[in-house]
Amino acid sequence: MAGGADMLAAELDTVLGTAWDESLEPFRNGGDGAEVSWLSRGVG
Image (cartoon, rainbow, N blue to C red; front, side, top):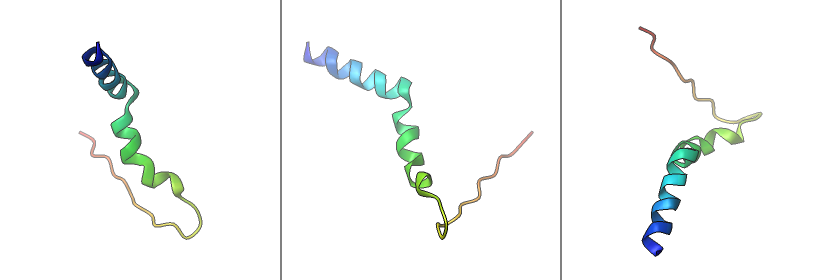
């Protein structure tokens, strides 16, 4: 049963985008005097 719970937790992390959320956390504290990171997107 514990294996099923661990598998469920891992799947929920995947579908809820936990990895993306953790990666973007540093960008949530923007404001006056905050470091700016410019993101670019290649098209084509």
